[in-house]
Image 1 (cartoon, rainbow over the protein chains, first blue to last red):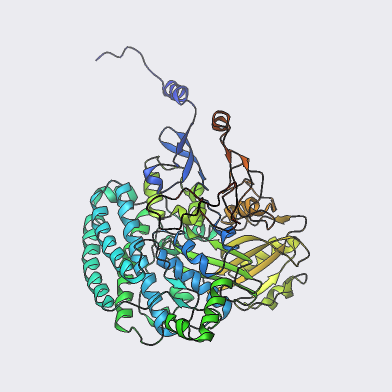
Image 2 (image 1 turned 90 degrees about the vertical axis):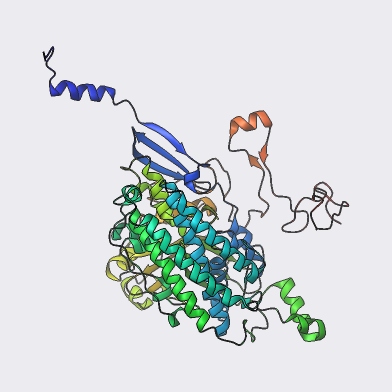
Length: 408
Length: 195
């Protein structure tokens, strides 16, 4: 072979510099299947590499905090369904406990146990969806079908419990809307058996799947320090190696009675976040089984909270005092003493916090919602740059956020 | 941690009565030093929440409430910061996670965070003229130009206030579908409110 011209390395470098061109700005979303809702990422790309990522949120902003300050405490319960709409029961419970803490209300054990059951079933439902769509975003379509099958079963159970499949509005300040239906707990037990098989199947499909590992292992690692600095909570914080779980560390609603483990990651990459959620699914099932086994009897609402919880309907129809009490509660709302409270519950997406300022009466003066998805998304500008455009779907899927709660 | 520890270090701070966690009012001038002290010496390593509040009976109209969490000591602390002249120093240099919370407090209340790296609105669009969580802002909203000027030019559309018609939350009268079980009362509509 005859070499016609010798090319120096300097020439090659100069030529590649000449071909570099300028960075490209790309809008991902607000309507994009991988952004799980209406998130827009304003990206600056150098070829396939992300140089800058600026999340633009607010497309689903409905002014929930303003609305809350204009209605009574119980009227706001349906709005909490629409925060993290993949786990409405958990939101209902978190909100109710926050207001009850402000009122200094103690709930009977049966009510607390039912709420724990609700929270854990909501967690199973949310994580099943989270893992299903995460796998789909990284190219594994099948997992979604398996997890959505189980979610349909869960929705049927929710429907039997609350009357609605999706927007449950199950709690009231001081209790619940109704007691457990007859013969419901055995159905939950049967569901647990089924979902455990599905978790094992998903495990087999994904955990040692070469393609899934390539897409997630080592991608966008979040160090312990970075996770704490950005205030990440829930599975995303634990995947980074911080063993903090509000159910263990600040137990509420009787979580201290149940035996469960808190999975913690080591590297904080996309794969660790998947592993943590998988193990949380198993632990949730474990908690559900314990609650069913030890379900206490007795009242399912605070019977001594006459100024907060509605009296039983048959008494309203027959007794004068209860009729007046019912009328006052419906028109003026539950009477909550003046003060302030901040309560965070361990929701599937992280800590859902409510900061409530009350001046007394039935309407909150200020109600602040701290959405874990809002916080999870705020870390994107720190972890996305340096990754490839295609990795963004994996990163978004692994953070498991929901825009209803981010934009409120 | 006891609130007294913070008072001892920052004599300008004041303990507020509270039922759930140590609560301290701290002047804006001492905020950064206090948050750094809490983070580095008292293990409050995670900023759980930061939000604005409009007060009725305090010296300043606006205030910022910060909730810090210690993941090792498993406890919270609450800081009240009065916004003197609607200004509060930004803590995002100590807790980068405060960045978005502060943008939201600015967006909703108009509180300025001095030293904030990216002082933009976050939930409302950049050209939005009001701060909706202020108590003098009506629940229904105020008519403003559409954020997309090119669309507004062609359609003449604006962002309209929500229909209220007497109640706080009602749908438009006279436009219910056949299947809607609500009572269809045609005696009132948006132009002619319910008597």
